[in-house]
Amino acid sequence: MSELETRSAAAVAAELEAEGYSWAEVIPDGLQVVLEGEAPDEAARFRAISVAGRAVDGARVIDNLRVAPREALAAPDFAVEILRNDSGVSLIGLIPEATDRSHLREELAEAASGAPLSDLLQTAAYPAPEGWEATLAFAAETLALLPRAKLSVRPGHVVVEAVADSPGGQRRLESLLLSRARPEGVSIEVTIHAPPPVIAPFALRFRIDAEGARLEACAAEGEAAREAILAAAAAAGAKDADCRLGLGAPSPDWPQAAAQGIAAVAALGGGTLAMTDADILLLAPPGTAADLFERTTEDLRAGLPPGFAFRAERPEAESTTATPIEFRATLSADGRVRLSGPLADARMTALARSLAQARFGAAQVTLATRTDPEGLPEGWSLRVLTGIDALAQLARGSVLVTPDRITVQGATGNPTARETIAAALAEALGAGAQVTLDVTYDESLDPLAALPSPEECLAEIVKVTADIKITFDPGSATLSPAARPAIDRIADILRNCGDLRLRIAGYTDSQGREETNLRLSQARAEAVLDALRAARVPVMGFEAVGYGEADPIAPNDTEEGREANRRIEFSLIGAPAPEGAAAPAVYGPPPPPPAQAPPRIIEGPPPTVPPTRAAVPDGPAEDAAP
Image (tube, rainbow, N blue to C red; front, top):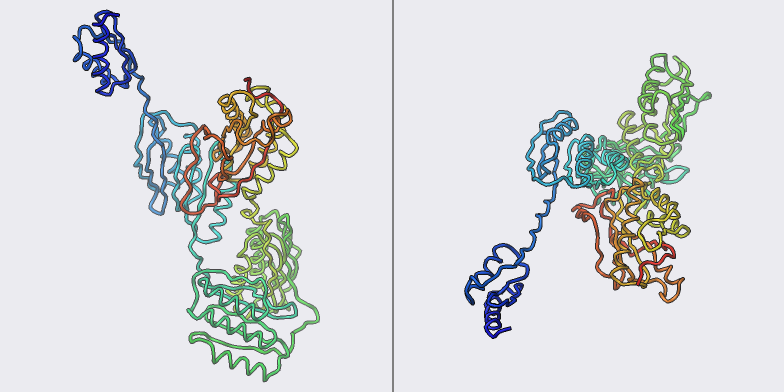
């Protein structure tokens, strides 16, 4: 190489370096200077040639520069907000240009029963992401169930925020949304808000008899009021009492009046306190001494806050009849209802049958009643119909109607059923009606409480994987036939778990190159995820992560140890990654951000939990060749 060539190349290189074009390589070729390398863009390539022309004659500069290929612009995050209220439906967001917009409007209009629809959507000329159309269709179906709601729709995920009319409506909506079938790959996250119910009438019943002290029904407007009433009931001997929260208290002094009335029942040694709005009735036990009754009732009357109407009764003895008059309605666990006992006439029989069929279904009702136009007490028909209505609040049980008492006993999956029954009986029959309520809440009958928690679901997977291994073909990410029983049983568990965020982690032994092991572990974790998806498990909240040879659970210097380290692990998202593990390569769309309010979710973010993992050895196959 001549000195001229060397000096020319050095001068060009110095100019390029001074301008920051270190990516350009200078190669002398006789009197010519060749520029090679990859320019970040066309403008940078042109400027580099111009800079080289400042050091040597531009005719001597040979352009062999390449231009880096331009990266395609990433597709935007497609999302739609669907707002529905009494005024109609509004659509806001960004959708793919290929989305059938008119069909979407038709679906939403149909779901909203023809309510006005405002379309403020924008479009982008990018392909629709996977699951987009199925997610939109599912959102439209969900909207039909929610008169007042906001649905946030992203590919494969729907976040629902809705308003129910009452806590009862809240529970019904939650149960309905949790139990609905969803398209494969589509998940839903639910938050239902409910205002405090308006309780009418505002009722309370406290009783002390041979069975002990109990708060049969209670209503309070706020936590402080509830605590005051429950403290008075506990002081009078009641255990495990509760009080329903709601609006409608007739006076700010309601808890004070209730506490004083409960204390009066305790002072009498028994009896019943019945409060309906501002009316208070104190029923003393039969045979109560007159002086004790007078002293107690006068003290209560003098101490009650203003605005309450008070009366007290002291029966001399329990009324009895030679031939008891009884009407009984029973509800079995399979939903069958039997009505028996006297009714006034054929018209009343037809009315009782119609009411029972409306509440329980026509095919479920059996009548064993008789017509007895004489001998029935006044108001008997109303008491019978009220009893049938009360039975409809139970999952199983019975109602016994007598001339002086209505007894309701049974089990329910609704924790507020007892208060609802007491309020309905008080409204229909008056505060003085003798009522016995033996209604228990059975969590197994509650569709919401019956859903397993994420931790319970993971525990079930642990049980399955304790005996069945997930194995792969040697040196590959193909699931072996022996892995199918484990996948099927895990899929059965996950389909009943509602919302769950699950990490599927793959591990290898230390044989072979670390980078190869990392790729293989990632591929195996994804193979398990794909198998669960194929088994119709909603996997939107799942992620597949490969950790390679990190976090061994046994020594790698024996075949037994290496086999133990070749494994698949399940854990709840929120558990930390194993110490020392490389940053995982997570494939697929990231999980949606958590909602602001703690939701009841299907495949939504659970609370952070301690690291709990179900380890599944993936068999003795070699993970990678050295």
